[in-house]
Image 1 (spheres, one colour):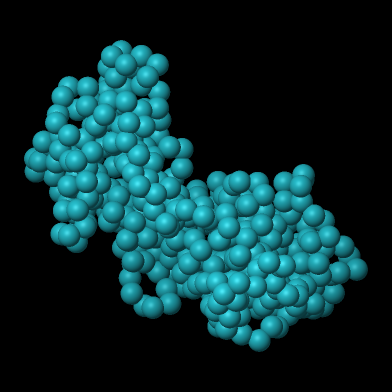
Image 2 (cartoon, rainbow, N blue to C red):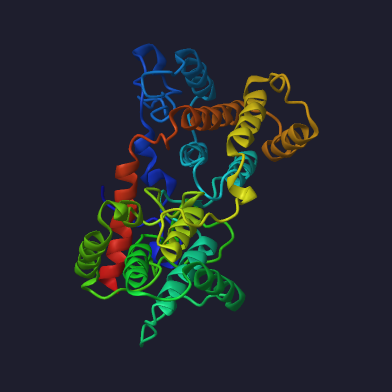
Length: 374
């Protein structure tokens, strides 16, 4: 796909939603549905159709009927619909993201959205602090160009935590810690986004990694892995899996799993250390059910599910309903799509965007172009 000159990506103005909206095209409309008011041949339902099993066709039919009732979709509504499809319940910034999207729907204007696999400047700084702490523990304090300026209190607290978890240095620990450092520093964590800028403040796309690594870091990692396997045998498997597990840095448990890995290195026993549970990563299943109940009540004009009339649910209903404003056909369609998107992710235990690979490639092409320009 060609890159359109509709924004200045290098200065943090993001990628327009319209550049990725084609990834939502799903069910083809019948000829009877195509009239002067509905000139688009496909419903925007690609990612709410489920996976062929466990999905409810009746729900999809209702959502598509809501789309038909709107008639011709303005660019603003199309942007909002695209925004809805990129709400991932496995991200660290969910469920706040739901509030953000509801406010955007209420305002009738899409706002900036983080891209799949990417984090904001807050999480970028946290991951960078872990990488720097590992490097410092290893004594790698040479002349290395720093990418971002971190808050000293954040950097100091994480450095102390890493030192406490790792303890005294010894050869096997050194190899495991360095391999973890290389894995973390090479993870793609750039802070670009797509959508509209909104607040007018630029978000720097580069640096897109926690630390700048030497050109031969891949060969160094392979050498470390070979030596670690030689010393630990099959016990090395858990230590050598992707940093923080298979999830990307945007996953809500990434930091916890990173700390489990670092703490296990300190004990030289897998899961020899378990950090205390963070309330931000606990109880998400129940939280999601509460949000689904409120979203369903808005678009279907129904009451909250039975048993959902406690104080917390009522407060959530008021907050989201106030953000959305008076129900209108386009709002009901968008909220129904958001509800179905979240419901699908809950049922299938995955981010259900079917063309996420193409989306990630669009982002990487732009970021790589910036690297080449630099």
